[in-house]
Length: 314
Image 1: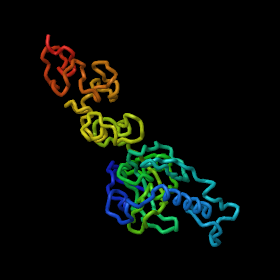
Image 2 (image 1 turned 45 degrees about the horizontal axis):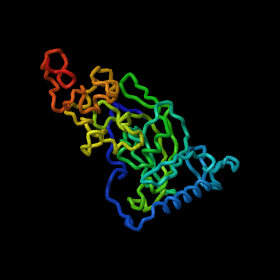
Image 3 (image 1 turned 30 degrees about the horizontal axis):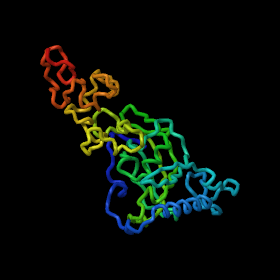
Image 4 (image 1 turned 90 degrees about the vertical axis):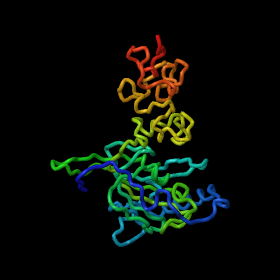
């Protein structure tokens, strides 16, 4: 695969894997726990009846023409790994199978990935054959995708003399996940409601996301380390930190709170209170909220702007 330029541009339309209209049964009478049990049983049954062929595709055990020797028809149940994912207080089992180990970085579930995919149902119906490699912002897609990709590593980019490039040593494999990590009890195109999904993927590159461009990676804005970046809102303005350009609401953009310009926002703590400036609404600890002090004024002309000066007036 050869490209002329590499642009980190996140896709927003992935066969509707982002939010879009779909139809299905009412949430009022839907038992998600019961559906999870049913889906997992269906996936395990699928594993028992299928194996990974040497051509990289999944075949039904016992197929004759072109099939692998019987002794090589190892059920997927013996090959897959499992990842437990909790969503809305329900624990789901996401299964994955690696067919190639990438030599690059592994993404977190909030990063962007440059990847190819093909989506299918347990009955082998292909609902999306993909459209070549492109960037995907994991925040905008199905939980099965964003969690599943974390088990794979990217490849390496090789740049040619003409600035075109290609990837080698990419990670690749399969994801199998229940409807609870997919479209749940909603139908979508060729996908019936309550459908477990299968994706064949290849991961070429990873981009560490910074959704608000504040200098802090989105993954590092999960302050309580609970895996949920939406409940970290330091200034209580209903905008989570990963989407807030001023995390502490002190009137100083987060990007400007790296005082020593070393790229590490956690070691800038002017008043030494254990709270870094980008999360502290009184950076200098003088009892006056930073938002009420000037970011540029220096009343005592000591070279320290008032909002960082514990004693701004001599």
